Image 1 (cartoon, rainbow, N blue to C red):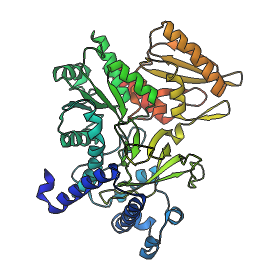
Image 2 (image 1 turned 180 degrees about the horizontal axis):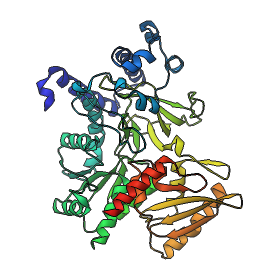
Image 3 (image 1 turned 90 degrees about the vertical axis):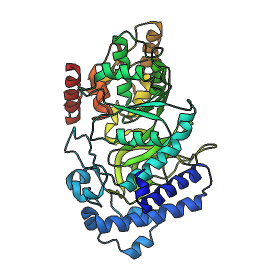
Length: 473
């Protein structure tokens, strides 16, 4: 209710909600959307050039006249990228407002380098949470009228608790915030609260859902029958459709990849009732570039674009980013028939998480999808890559009982990996350990893949350190 104490914020909130409802209801045409994006993109350029010490220098040669004349091609030529290294190096000089003008302070996890500041002002939260609220309304309504929602976040300095708490409050659902990795809460208490409060929906990482299920089984409970979950909203890690299906089956709930976002970029994509992630084009301007050259990627025959995602914020908050290279590979596709007119967004993994296998370049999405599509009901997995007799080989650990189904999965996986990448495969049925729970804190690759062909990198070492602490509890 803080908006009622400020007439401008109240107007912004009402305007944001109305626009999101109109757009997703199909009442915006392409011309109106383009006009909205370019008007607000130009506002963001003028805003950051005036307010951010970093952008004041970076965009010093971008005059008002040139800003007014920008189109997509000229924008790409005239405006340089903002990189993750810029965020690390510039830190508070990236901001367009001082922290004192924000309402809350967050930061990145800092597991593999200095944590970068990510404060939010009221504009940030209103604009982003309005988009999530409108998108999630239909998602939640498909699974009941009233929900008790558990938000299982990583740390107190992360936006997870505040964001989903606010959105669920907007939708009229009760919220309980728990951090199972906290020594104060822990998994035993978290599982108790899920049952005692009859929690029906959970926001968490896929790794957290796996860990909770494992702890429930240790306690003699069946995740599918002894809990009342209807809805799993996953965030923080790459998640393929098959992983969603497997985790949904474990908990007897419908699983969604609920958003594509990061601490620094805020909300870039959000789940809709059809189960697909879609863009948020009223808030973000999207470009897809070749990760090697940085050149814009042309649409293919299906009008899809695949490459590294670059975003520019269309709202003027605490830390708008201009042509920010996310480091993530995505596929952007037309909206299709029915549902929201926003484009379909499919994250494919980080650019740096691509893996070379016998001369082929494999994305994180492709690797996970091939493994899990052959292992129905798999609870968890981990992949080790080695090289024998000049051939790349895989060892895949699957957390699933060694049954006839598992043996069929092994045969199918061996054949599929040989066909796709020329890789011999050894399949082992065993639990991978806590390393796979670190994806949201470090990276998908550090959590899921051990590449013996190269020396351990800092991300792998960071993931191992977190895993050891978690296993010691």
